[in-house]
Image 1 (cartoon, rainbow, N blue to C red):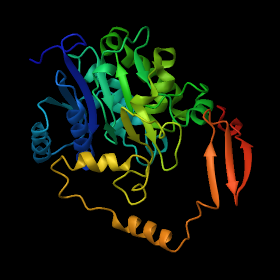
Image 2 (image 1 turned 180 degrees about the horizontal axis):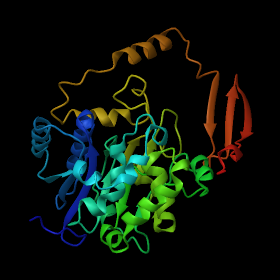
Image 3 (image 1 turned 90 degrees about the horizontal axis):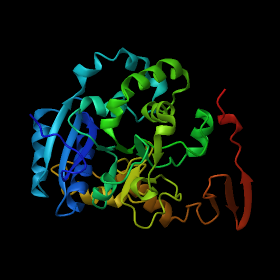
Length: 332
């Protein structure tokens, strides 16, 4: 029987979710956690297993060459058979790069009942400092803490919670109190009643179902790096860099995005570094554009205000400022 884990026994419980196709990125995220942990940190990984082969689990175990850790795999297939409400979520309720596996983070309190507090992390991120500070944070009245999403206003207006919409890629969960308050039933009821307004899967459900029980986390714990620079990607000392959207660093369209080099630095520490093929096509195209002086950046640029209320355009040195219209994102 596994030891019961709570914030006071010195173990940091970290949950990630992956299937066979995402193991390489899971390994890079795990390597970054192990490389940057404090000497006193004891890490226990809980992997929501969407079908990871045994040979890949052996590869992940080799990460102990970086630092020692414990790891448990959670079989989500059998549990999900008893949750028919999840079948309501089809492709139209998920982004193109998000799978149904991502929705199981909403039920970590049920899937890992021996843990009283959990950090959940997406696999498309890199951790750059010890997680102990976040894990032992006073959560106050909140059941879950998360960082405001970079598209908070747009998604918030759609959901009817402007400026409060959170990103679900990094979560601190009080799983003990979630069980005590029967959050599973509350979440499933919300899905049944509000499925029509779900566009971003687990993230919409998290924001809608938890409401006032979802609290704020400092920006540094989820620095959201997009293809363009934002106040999140410009964070000088991020604790966690999260590669949002479809343009990941390992894809040809994401090689030059902010902080992409961090992903490759930690991938080199894993068994997957030798099998990875660098996306040279995008890099070659970028260098050719630079050599031929065809880049449009000196002539045109767009920036966004810190509160995301204005877009500023610069065309041939002339600056234009345009207020963003959020009315089309309002909940109908």
